[in-house]
Length: 280
Picture 1 (spheres, rainbow, N blue to C red):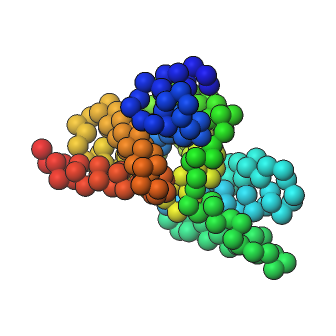
Picture 2: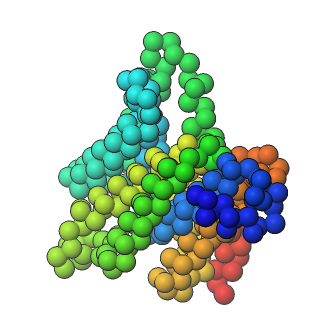
């Protein structure tokens, strides 16, 4: 981290200087790691029409946090990760086995996760207020170890993308054709769902449950408006998410607003501009 503190000291901000705020430097590094992840995953969320699925995963992560707190776990995050991964795998299995539309299956899982989370959080007359921080998020509370874990996930997702991009795209656009060509569609969908589950769960306490789904939808939706091919689509989504993240964290610190909400608003502006130029 010392090397990072020296590098960020080049920036013309008071918090970036040698005697500046370490928590802000950590938050800035976290944004540089997490936003490319959101941008990359967003392309497949939009292509596969899974925006409601990512929202449902956020609800399942909240339920996992509630379970961890109820069990007296020192760190409820591992419980949330396990619950979200199991949730994503069950969803993938049910979607393939049941003769129901995706939005119906998502609705069933999402409503169940929300109800279970609220039930556990308020069991025995407990106050729900201790979970309010998860709704808004606080990126300034991020620890270096959490950044390192997300960086490993970023590397893993990038490698997975480079190796399996064509199969992932074909599975999303035309599952029957992908299956006829020997692609195990269910396996790729399960791996993609696990990747979203991990990112959503680990970043939920920073970004905030109320806006995390927007960060998984807006970068890809904006890039799709103006991209002419798949390379541009992925590149614009990642760069748009990264630019919004950097602008959002700096703006939120200067004006004292929520970082997750500020980043989301910048992404909304990115989408609005791309929408205006979509035909050109």
